[in-house]
Picture 1 (cartoon, one colour):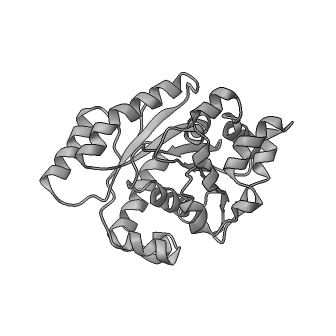
Picture 2 (picture 1 turned 30 degrees about the horizontal axis):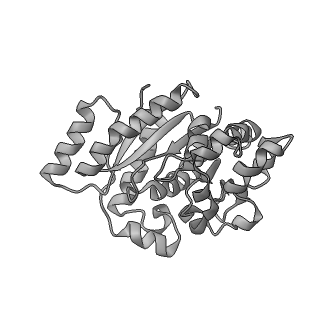
Length: 261
């Protein structure tokens, strides 16, 4: 199997992108025996912090800025990958200077927007999955993620603001498909789900729009506990509602429920 690169993306914050990246990586590694690379493309660097990675030893912002001057940008990016305490999970850390890398830097040629694609080519024999935790903004890091990605997972909280934002997000993905024709939507992942007529109606609206939908992740206090314990749900609370749902979601993801966009 070739390495599968997935961008975990939503332009809205607070929808569980980082929680999804962390738990997807843990379940792929432990339950499915896969080798996983996680790239932290968000300037908040919560994924980097969760794994206890050291951005001073190399990070994505540095790679985006400096790879263009490297004779082997993929190898340069790969040199910044760090192991984690979890078997078969590695990370390319983020750094808060990612917030300074907006799309104007791509237009000016001061960042290497293809660097994650070069990285994938460099490490394709070392990993089975590459997960990119994207920022809640369309900037140089998210552009680099979509240029490298095979598919996109959109975690979404089922509220009116998120639903209205989907049109803009899908437009951005379609625009990036012109640069990266293989890019597709793996599926929307409803998060923080609970039994409520409006929530069910919002989920139905996504389905009516023809979007592939993963099984929802139920709301659970154990997700917040996970961040304090710095352990994925698979370890900290495997039988919680969210812990059970994330394992079901990963089975759908591995099986491939998505279609092209």
